Length: 239
Image (tube, rainbow, N blue to C red; front, top):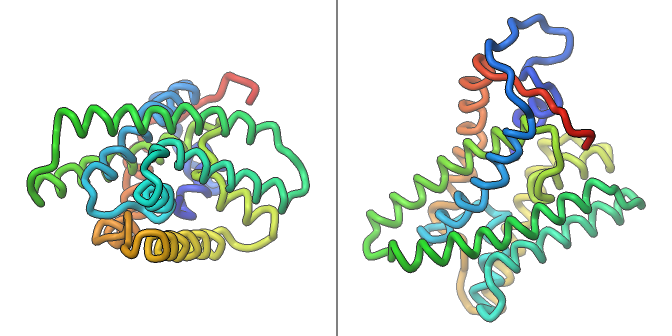
């Protein structure tokens, strides 16, 4: 998640603290933003995986594991990877945050939804040309970008993959941008190593990975600027 997205997540109105800003005309429950995030992020990830032209680094690693060990589904590897992220955070912080347990439950259901969406996509819409691959990638990219916006606004526990860099930078006292870059680099290198050692090829790494790295953060920022002028969110649940 880009640094500007995380900063905005800590500032519900999308403005730095102390800066006067006109209130958006529409205030919605933050729980609604969470529901949209919860339902759509598996759809977007599944669509990008279905396109098979490259994924964002964090989603590519479980994709590579699935390519090497297909007896375990992509959705399950997605959950396993995020369990590892939770373990790293707990080890670094030397404590078990109860919110991570909620994040794990969100992640587990999200992994099942990824498998479900991938199944009907493969059955109903087989990829038969590069043009179709590009169409699915663009659609999945757009869904993920919009969904991450809702993730930054919901103020509720989300998948570990979406909070790991933010929580890690707070734990080790390093700037978010530096931690995010290293997270993406380490994940990308691990994905390449897993693919080359386990299968002799790169899995989940393609031109779409480069496009995502260059444009995802900017796209999320664009959605934030458009939506923050129109909508604000208020949390009601004590989470």
